[in-house]
Length: 330
Image (cartoon, rainbow, N blue to C red; front, side):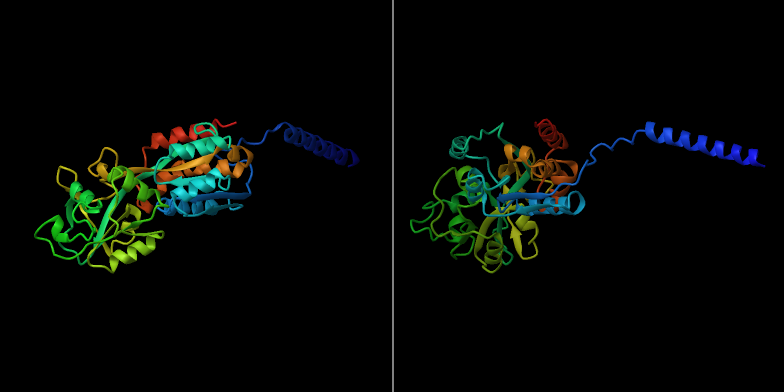
C-alpha cells in the first residue's frame, strides 16, 4: 500500500515538472497587426478650419471612444488663418485648413525652426465642394453659370455702390437687392473664394461676413434675397432650410453632391482639398499625438467618416501613403 502511494506521488511530481517546463518554454502569442501594445494618455490639441471642424470632431470622438479613451483630443474651429497663427506659436499639435499653407506662414514656421516636409507634415484629409446657397423662397436663381456667380460677387461689377439687384444678373429676375453672405477673413473658405474663385478681385462691399457658420446658415434661411457661400457639409446638414445653387461650368448645371465633388468630377470647378498639418516634433515627443494622426489617415478615420460629414474621401491609396509616412517617423 505504501509503495502504491509513493508511486502515485512520484507520477504527480513528474507531471508537475513537465507542466512547469512547458510554462517556461511557451512564448506568448504575438500581438495582432495594428493592435496597440499599451494604452495611451494625454492631450492632442487641434484647431483651425471651421469647414473641417465637423470631420475632425467626428474622427476625434470615434478615436477616444473606440481606440484610446485615455487620450483627450480637443478640436477647435477658430478658422484656418487663426489656426495657423496658433500652430506657428507652438500652441497646437495639428492645425486644420481649408486651403494650402501660405508662403508667409511657411516662412514664420521656419523662423521657429520648423520646416515644411520634415518638421511639419501636410496631409490632404478629404475633398470639399464650395457651395453657393440661397433662400428656399428663391425660385429664380436655382441655376447659375460660374461666371454669373463670380461677377455678382465682384465689387463694382454692376453698380458703383455694390447694391446689386437680381435683375442686374438676368433681366427677367426680380428688381430686388441681393444680400451677400459668407465667412470672414479668418476662414480658409473666404480665402479660397477670394484667391481662387474671384482671382483676388475685391468682393462686394455690402457682403455680410461672419465668423460662425451657423450664423450664416440662419441669415440665408431668413432672407429671401440672400446668396452665400461655404463648404458643402454645412449645406447638406441644413438642406431642409436652404437651397444649393446648381452651377453651370460649361456643360450644364451641376448640383454639388458626394457624387459630383472631385478634382476630375463635374463639380471640379468649385472643388478644393482640405488639410491637416502635423507638428512632427510634437508627434515624436508625444506618442498619443502620433497615434491620433495615424488614426486620422487610416481606413477607420477620414476615409470612413468623410462622407458622413459632407466631404468626398480621397482614394484609399492616398491615405495608405500617409500611413507609411507616419510609420516611418523616428
